[in-house]
Image (tube, rainbow, N blue to C red; front, side):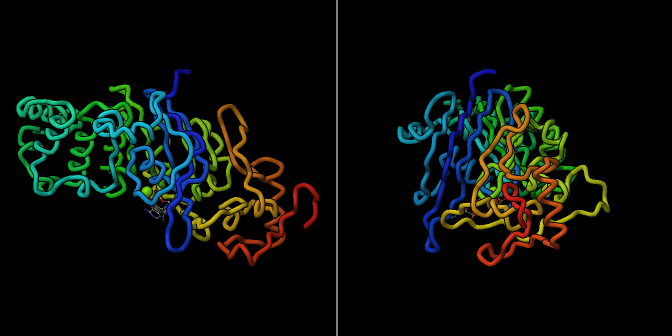
Length: 361
Ligand SMILES: Nc1ncnc2c1ncn2[C@@H]1O[C@H](COP(=O)(O)OP(=O)(O)OP(=O)(O)O)[C@@H](O)[C@H]1O
Ligand SMILES: [Mg+2]
């Protein structure tokens, strides 16, 4: 194992709002080796983008951040404090869901790519324009010379996202964070863009964090997967390991059944997860998924299970993981009691499952 390029330890991010303190990220840790990729997966509001924006130093000033974030052994908060102008944009870059918001509508494509090279890499105008053409070729844009002179609105959504990728790659970053990079695109284009990102990452030996709500997007594309919910890591595993068991955590299992994927045959019936994700205001003491979980027991209400290694490199934060005796027992007890989780108010409801320790209902 080589030294990690990115090392995040016990990251907490909260936002002070009028309603109280919103805990967007609550104790997340992960390492990413050079040249490797990690997929961060979870429903809306689970804390994926906030994790990414924290690394990118893009949080608003009212955000409170605790924990450690290192890049190649250097403390990211120290780098931010020193105002190292070229760090973000050169060493680490990010692409977002909607290419139109990242592109300037009134500037030609070529100028936008060249600008990054001129600002960060001191290239002359002509050098930067020539490199911009090469970059367009690398991201699979035909007739690059013509495209350099066009404006974003003259390109299709897929081509625009390729331009955004070209800009992100212009200065040869060691880490690329892609936050839902294909959600706004149609299915065939999505696949092309995801495959392109994967190929470019391998060619360049770059590391990548790929953020998505769709487990199908990361399947076969990343080395590692981290499943987030309510700001916490629910499960983390090497990608093949996670898909061998379809998830040890009930939330991962539910995500697997729920989410339409690029590779899902049409007319497949998808099973929604009942209820909706929590907006975590203040501190929750139990598991944030408890209200929606078919495996929940009363201890899940009062005790957040720690992230425990269940198999080699396979971590899961659950009292009753899927397929274990505890999981089978809890699910059966809930089923027999006629309990169906539906996002009930946590204060008002009791979970009828058998307690693992006492065996009582
Ligand atoms: N600037 C902010 N101020 C207050 N709360 C915020 C802010 N940004 C994010 N949040 C809250 O933090 C939580 C996590 O948000 P985040 O954007 O990371 O979710 P996400 O997993 O990226 O979801 P999505 O799939 O919708 O993009 C949410 O509850 C969100 O409302
Ligand atoms: Mg997001």
